[in-house]
Image (cartoon, rainbow, N blue to C red):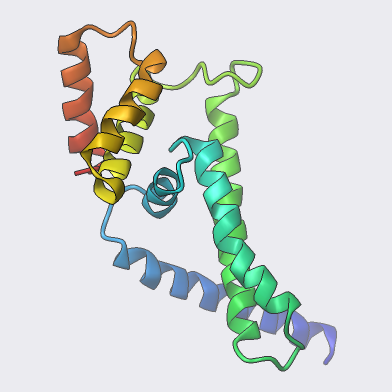
Length: 171
């Protein structure tokens, strides 16, 4: 293979990966680009913020990395797993960029977030646990995350909850 053929194949793979990503992305049927990672983070008891979603992304990638590691170049579905690793890597890069944008005004503190973003994390986390483990778990999670909500008046809490369920479609 010469250099030009290599470059042509590289571009073809990038283009094919983009097409496949668009098709798969439509299947999720949500406007939240990180919905799968947000739900995965909540279900694995992570915070549903960027660090929690990033941890979930790492866990999703592990099965593909292990498959590639445990198989030779001609192994079944090795090429497919390599493609999945590429897609997860790009999603991870977008996640890192989004996290850095939110943190650009502080030293690791998320000062650029909307004031109700922590409440959104707590409530979506609680909701996901409710769906997977029952209502008693939701009460526990809200109590554990209550430090994020402690300064909020009841009316504000209800407003935030309604906004969250409406905008990020947790329901």
